[in-house]
Image (tube, rainbow, N blue to C red; front, side, top):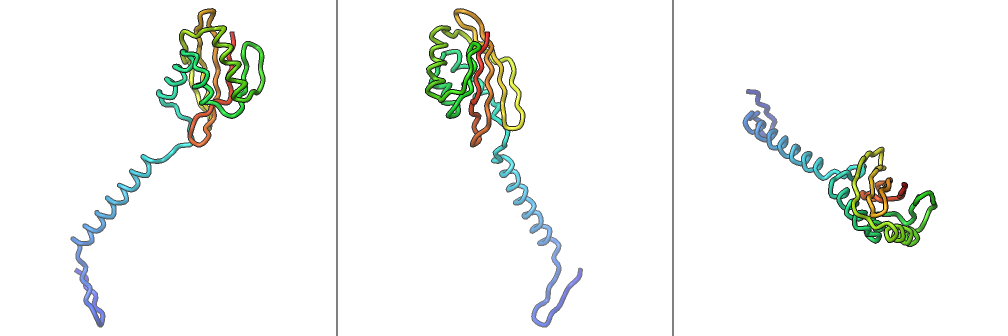
Length: 154
């Protein structure tokens, strides 16, 4: 066992204390690392089922107000071959008119994919009159999926 002496103090290497100290530091670092990984916010779009269920409910109920809460200030809309970029208020009126003329019965999501910070959603909206294809594009803004494009086609 090595020992070191100086003019004032004698240092003795004690392996048990060294091992205990090292073990304590290791556990502390692992705990901090684990907590940091659990609280990391990703830059990927939300693909959790609650988000998709909310979209399905909004379209099934024809709830224009709730759909508009998921949108940006301006929405790129294509509605039955008529397209444009509309403010939220204008888009809300267009969508409400569509739902009034085509009362929704069921909305199903067929495909979801994402690339970088964008989410692409394809679904079918069954109404009393006919079934429509619905395409939604979202982008991640402040860690929330925000719809910026809505397409509804025959």
